Image 1 (cartoon, helix red, strand yellow):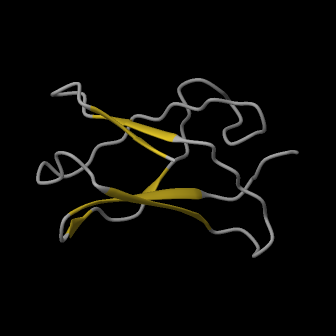
Image 2 (cartoon, rainbow, N blue to C red; image 1 turned 90 degrees about the vertical axis):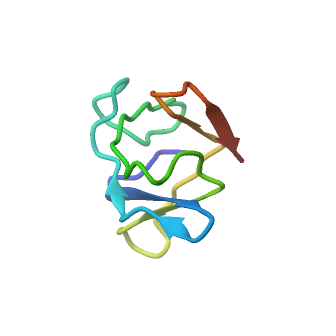
Image 3 (cartoon, one colour; image 1 turned 30 degrees about the horizontal axis):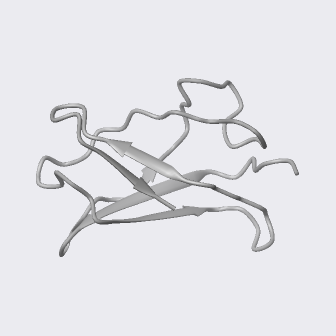
Length: 87
């Protein structure tokens, strides 16, 4: 199992509010993000009106059959230190 070289994006939702598409391109833990066996960490800025996301979307701009397998996603609000997990 490899990974993906496609651009990977996240969109966070809280109720009716949502962020724009956020490119996950600068892993703090690996030079080549989204490779098999990696735990990648990203720091992204989001609008202040999104405080505690209740839903997320992860997608890529690669080909239809490009693989992207995520076991879990953890989101942490750096102001409140609240953590949420999405499986």
